[in-house]
Length: 278
Image 1: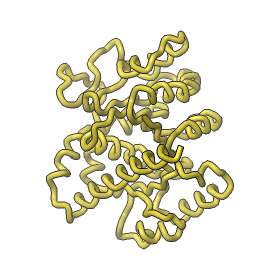
Image 2: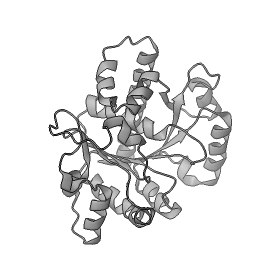
Image 3: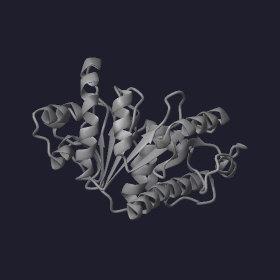
Image 4: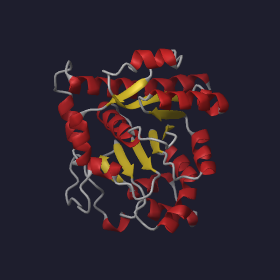
């Protein structure tokens, strides 16, 4: 049981949320893990749009689809109320999530309430994440920049692995390398570098970035892919991943799927390696 937190500096778009979507969907399909994705942002629909249509509740759950229990639609708001009453247990969390694949992938989306409510609820995330870790095999945390620094720091310190999301721009890479020298947490073995929206035609390709950053292993990537981008806008990501397995592995879609697989495998390998060294 592990916590994997996806982090970026917040200064530019790195495709962090969509990277989590790709990785969690792949792992849920290809591995026997029970996964929870927690979005810590405020009124951010990017994660929602990937898996379900807004304001639509399916009566039949089927293979994937949202939780149909209207009484439990509050998600993080409902969980926060239970936490304040000291009645929250790990197994209760699943009652407040959106189910994508039964017993495989669940989503706890961002708060859709007021800003004041969010400012209060975000304090609950460290405890909630730790509780979820005792129930799910993998807890993937989309750490938003709106989470206070002290709370974010606690989440990162409690994580088994931290995925640092960077853009393919040299300035983004240089900024992180400077930050890594100042903050020990970014130099630890539990840090993995991920380039989102990756373009393999750029001169800042996997090989060159890895060499430039002096990474022993190739940095991980989630390539930009038109089919994936469209699926993320149309709540069709699960269907896309089933179809990608059948597509030509030599074209751009095949490259996208291969890199998602490599990145997901890197995360699992790093978690297993760190666990052996504890």
